[in-house]
Amino acid sequence: MTPHALTGGFADTPLQAARGFRAILTALSRPGTIVALTGATPPAPLSPAAGVAALVLLDATTPLHLAGAHDSPALRDWIAFHTGAPLVGAEAAMFAIGTWDALHPLDRFAIGTPDYPDRAATLIVETDRLEPSGARLTGPGIKGAAHLSLPETAPFRTNHARFPLGFDTFLTCGDRLAGLPRSTCVEAA
Image (cartoon, rainbow, N blue to C red; front, top):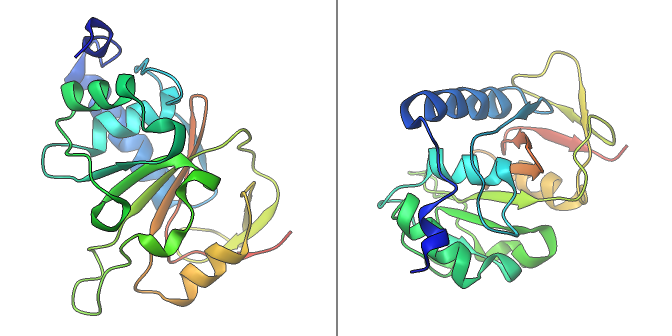
């Protein structure tokens, strides 16, 4: 483990974790809402928002898959020190972090079972752009409709069709995060 793995976490863990959790919960319960997440400075290529999400959502009982360039020694060490989350293959992951392309194929990730739909993976997708424009979102937590820049819409439509099964998604860009639960109906812009 490198000395850099010991840095970049929360300076005031109770306060920052509580604020981060509330912002993440807001984003997931109000699809299309973009929230700011600050307080973490993880190693590249992990964004600050994805770093806060990792610090808040991961612990020693949450298997994590790092995809593509995110599967780096520096990031593995940082995750191990700050969260203790075990690193696993995509099929065993409760959480996965990577770019949209690196996370493919998506059918590797758990979607839950009819008896336990909560045993599905949550994808943290690092994007180059996160804006309230593009795909049209409707469903629980959205008054009327919302819009969100998505890497593509077809996989999210397929995912919604499986509801109550399917994966949940967080999209991150820099210090911003948006949630897209499987219950959200996605239509092309």
